[in-house]
Amino acid sequence: MSNPAVIDLLGVLAFGELVAFERTANDARFAPSVADKIALGRMAADEYLHFEAVSARIVELGADPIVAMEPFVEPLTQFHNTMQSKDWLEGLLKAYVGDGITADFYREISVYLDTQTAALVNEVLGDIGIAQFAVDHIKSAIADDAKVAGRLALFGRRLMGEMISQASLVANTRPALAGLFVNPPEGVVADLDSISTLVSRLTVEHSRRMDALGLAA
Image (cartoon, rainbow, N blue to C red):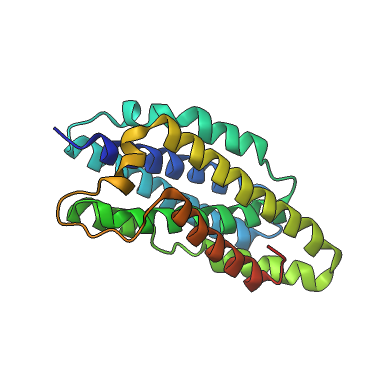
């Protein structure tokens, strides 16, 4: 029988990729140029392919992707409803910051997974171009209007806070997933002594991304 923690992890990753597909496709509606619409459309297609790949792995492990995703639908939907972007730039920042934090989390936890699943997770986290796309457009917007920076910095801080809050909620309600940190699989030498250590690392990386934009974290 598959490790429930691994199924949980793949379930939240699958639903996250599905939501990323929807969000990126929606952001394309507000893109200021046809070229930007095309770029975001391609990225949305990549996100959906990632969703399909993770779902296929869940099936290989003997579980139902829909069932695996179900526990995470409410908390992730609540997060996205709470942190709805008001415009094109906030949507880009949400993709850049949110996807970055998510990717950092999965990279940290991938060492706790079997080789095949870890390889898939890292493949799904591969760069599809959204980070540089967001950085270029956000920095250009700030150069045109410096007042944009303050609003985006505030939104970025709210994103980080909400994501940590939702991650803690998920961990508390899915003990098998949280247990990966304290009871790693045989042969895995873990360097995370607690979820708080992970949060500290994620915060450092968040600050680095905000610095790249010239925004206060």
